[in-house]
Image (cartoon, rainbow, N blue to C red):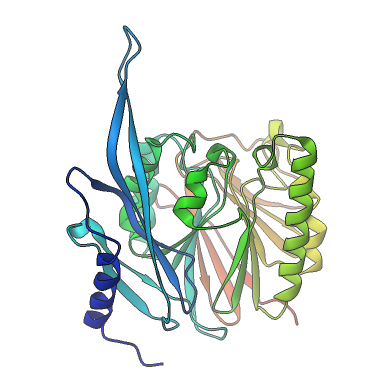
Length: 366
């Protein structure tokens, strides 16, 4: 397919974002722009504007500052598959410029994505993880396994997250999952433009299902939580069934069904209960966070990868699971996935650049 020239793409981006309105006096961009909900035909650009701030100081203690944030967005339609688009916000300077790539259509076209999570604290470490990740090249898109920030309802934390990730997010599409530290906040829906905390998308020959594993925050009653989990589980099975023609099928969530952390083993029975479904529908790999380390388990052909080393304090991996554990390391990390027609190559990388593990996933059997 013939691509449009970069200069024309830039003009289209500027025109669309100008329509959203320039910044008022005293306002500033504190997050984004970044691309979400990217398909081969559409994409939504989101950015965060700080309009004001409030200071609070209990007598005799340190002053606390909380910004007032406004989420801006604009949606593009009529895009072309497998094409890189550039964009810019007027008066945003270099920080307001970036690009994203639309996915290729189903077929042999290669693509590359990264996975990481638990970036909520130790911002200096989070910065190092992103810095090392970018040394390995810019991915087509990013999967975040949850716990982006330490408290989702604290408006002061989101500008910190985006400040660290901005150089990466301004060049890739972003697909996050909801962690327990997001507290099911409205910011997650506002920022990432998902009407429900579970969703799916296609990228080339792959299908991706992202679910909300933090059932404790979805409702205030056990009945409400049970109803949500039943609804989401039914949706997930329908989604996997409908995409059996995809060469690769991936699932993303925050809580893992398996763990080598002794004190957390058995903590997520609702996720463990999904394992037979993953096997039935031949999920290629499932990615998780929550446990702050790197883990790789393999059970009945399904790879379970925990990459929760984005910055939060680490957990020891002190009890590998006999028969299924392939690799466990307590270190900050991220995962690079390079997908081709016949195999998906997975590479786990430590914050210091060391390769922790490499393995390949063969295409799903018809």
